[in-house]
Structure formats: C-alpha cells, structure tokens
Image (cartoon, rainbow, N blue to C red; front, side):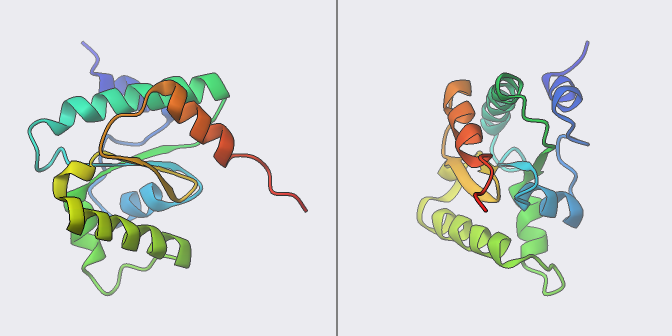
Length: 146
C-alpha cells in the first residue's frame, strides 16, 4: 500500500516527507519552492493535518499547473538549525523566520502546519482548502512587471 505522503511526493516532487537537514529547511523557506512546516515531530494530532494540507496543496498545484517542488520540514529541524550561527539565509528568509518565531512565541503549537508560498507565510494554524491554496498560488506566481 502506498502512503499519502509517498503519493504526494511523487505528484509534487518533494524529495522526502521531511528531510531533517539544513538544506531541506532552506528549501522549505525558499521562494523558489512551496514549503510546509509541520509539528508532526511534537504533536500527535499533527500528522492528520499535515496529510490534509499536502492533499490540498497537491490539488491546488494540479489545478494551477504549478510545478514547484514542495519542501516539507518539521519544527524540530527548523529549531535545530535556526539556533546555529552557521545556518545562513537571505534577507527574505530571515524576515519569514522572524515572523514565524513571533507567531510561535504568541500562539505556540497552534500555528502549525505552516504553508509557505514564494517565501512568504501563506497560511498557518489550520488547513486551508484546495481552493484557498489555489488562490494563493495564482496571486503569488504572477510575473513581475518590468
């Protein structure tokens, strides 16, 4: 039997459900990818939310023709690498990390799962519908005017 996570990764191109390393965290934060930050490492109710979010992301990507990689990472990995001085990110990713840390300090585990689109926090604290994600993808991927 194939798990939903494996099927999701096959459809969307994510390399693993959660890479657990600095590169996978950078990928989740990157504006080149779609990122999901999960609390599945710490919260028994998180895997069901993560699976629902992954399914909705896959449906939205299919509907929009979005071919970006979906990078999935856990909060444990994020905390591990964000606390080290040698973990380097750009200014945009740094701003994203700071906003997520502020949310986490004010609301704790309730902010997960996080959905990151174009290096920006697109959703947190619940599972948006495929239609809501589709709207975010279409709004985010418009070409910049010259």
